[in-house]
Length: 315
Length: 256
Image 1 (tube, helix red, strand yellow):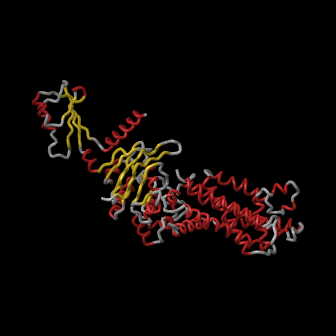
Image 2 (tube, chains in turn purple, red):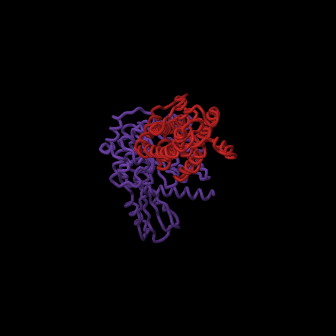
Image 3 (cartoon, rainbow over the protein chains, first blue to last red):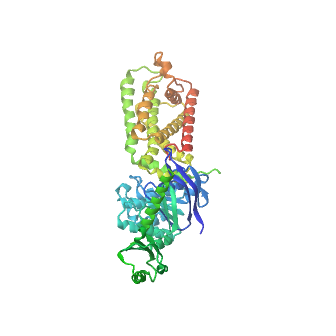
């Protein structure tokens, strides 16, 4: 599939000297839902802000729908709808007029039929004449999405769309994002909820300390998630894996006191019972058993820590 | 390629005028009432005791200065608020991420604020007719001069709004600099009435040239030659445009 966004070597150094992004390279494919995952302060918002035009990048280049974001900012920005993390709204404006304003601001001629459709899809039509200040937080978030969609963007950025949003609204938001994808809109969302990335994304990128440390298909990540680790605490330490256990993917840990077996929970035969039978047949006694499932969260935390350690080692 | 998005400019322009519309009472009634009070106090009560200045009755003499006083402060206030509020509330994200050039942004914001200043100036002009007989020697020049003043001071207000990082900073320049300079700039007197050295010192106040020029459009004469007035207003316009150009090219206080 063709890339709709190409980012290469993107670096951002703020005036304070803080480096928010270190040479990020990323291709976003047209029509996908891409989740950018990372802890607070990892650079997610900076990355989005540069692509959208709110922050100026220091080095590197970005193209959106083939338009360079600096040289041809009109072309790139016309293709983008942005829903920022904070609820920035004009309190005194009415819902309908603020959405109409956004469409005009992006250079499009007035189209009230389209705006009606957007407001209806977002369950905002009944509130079209309400002042924004009269709306609840969730409704304000919807207004911001309506504003971002008003000029029919090809790419929609949702910066932490469900931060501080109740469970019901979060479900609605997910349904909305899927519905948008059906219409061919590419969606990039940032989140620090793993659950959200798992639920929604086609691909997941993990960003930490301004570096993109992993970009992978969600299904590939889920396969890693499907793995479980069985740890067998041995009564007596083993110097090496006995040849009889070769058919299982077993390793020795903890100075020979532990046997570790990684297996796929999705597989027809996990091999757990046969391994334990074989241990019994070999007369290897064990004190305890423990199984543990690795989650996306583990992978994520592991990646982020490894990265932080590496950064410290360099410093 | 020369590109100008009329849709974007009209969206901002209409939005800004709608904002003024919501506060129509405070934004138009207040200056009109204030100016009427000036007319009653200075024009009628004190003015009746005053000699004519250059053959012009005092009540009529102060009209151009009063219009200028209101237009200076309102232009700065409106234009600075127009761009400061989105910065303050955070809604500027949308402007920065929109396919809108610096020129379009300035034309829309400054155009809207200048429109409001023009309406205000004309309302005060009309109100003055209720109090004094007011001949206008050069009506076209008067409108043209008002437009120049409105645009220049709205540009200045725009700069102030981009620069300001608090409401206090937003108000300090109009209140502490522009208003005193206007009072001292011959709004209520001819600088010919001042003794030396004040008369010479006053010539360093740019507002003198603006008020004098505007007064020329009414009465065909001012404290200084009309060319000087036009020169000053042109210089101020160019300086403001240059500063705005610099602000957008560096992203000064708009973009990180």
